[in-house]
Length: 216
Length: 210
Image (tube, rainbow over all chains, first blue to last red; front, side):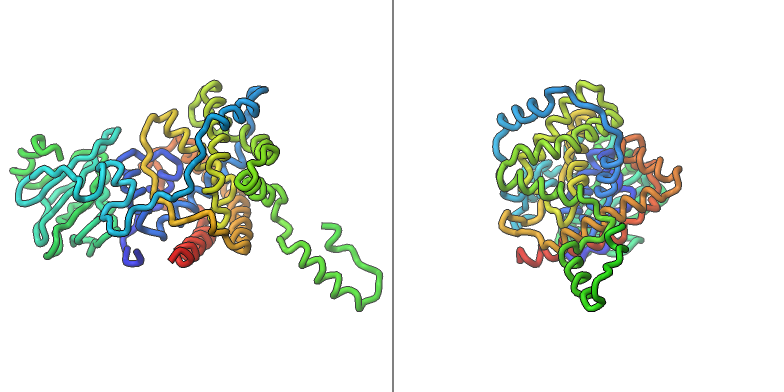
């Protein structure tokens, strides 16, 4: 947990705290924060700003019977169980990601996309796209740029690119200025969670032709 | 405060004792509002005793603010009324999840209202981080609770002192008028100290839970 070196940006954490971040990026934030106490503390600090905003809010009167109605509502609600939502120690995926996969790494329904690389697109709302990628150790991802923002978080194995070494929990935040070539570090497969808010742009001709078919 | 500067005309020898007594009976700094102290106690009364009077007090303070927050976020009055009652009911059912060493009651209320807003207005699923391993037997350290409360108040004071233009941007971000792309990387918010306190509380919690 203390090995995480590449963190989320303030803008992402503030936007997630405010509740305005897209679902796909929110999944990356929730997954990273599950593993990173530093970003959890930063997120909770941004939520404290939200608390100040609520304190400073004007007041809008409620219906006359609102308190009684709320007690009536409380009486219909089941008691919440006290057990915290925490993934099992040997799990690869934190719980927010497991919710989207329907289980841990073993439950991913991979599709081969060539060169030993596999992907699984996760269902989210909004224009962006979220996928899991499995890249064999020592293999390069196709060189690509972005029209928007791309977040790539490592869950297992590691990759390296122009920005450094990314191991479990690390997140690369890439904007459209960055043309990067991630290479999975030799050894085990590198499993990543990647979210974009616009389609990727591959530099080579063949990936560009294949892009519509691959859905990436 | 008048009581602090009033001069006791009694024997000089008596002064240190009365000062010590005052420090022990009121260890909180002057800027700690009694309301804020009470909110934590009210949540604890709901958690421990299902105390309806404690809930009514929290309701009177927070429900009108939550309703305003939801309406600023785009809810019409009917929806805001309905969601506010649901948000307040959630305070009751989740009272055992509130950790006063990491958040003020206002912050906790904000997160519940925000989640309800995403669900009702944006109709979007919100991925949430895992919980910390945290059981009801782990009572937070009272010194941590007090420090967090002080940091929350300092944060509120610091935000109040920001230039109006910047404060306006922050409000727009939190009421849902700014997208992620419109939020600057440098928010200019003075969050260093409260972040450090929360980080410390997280560390202690991890340590206590082994």
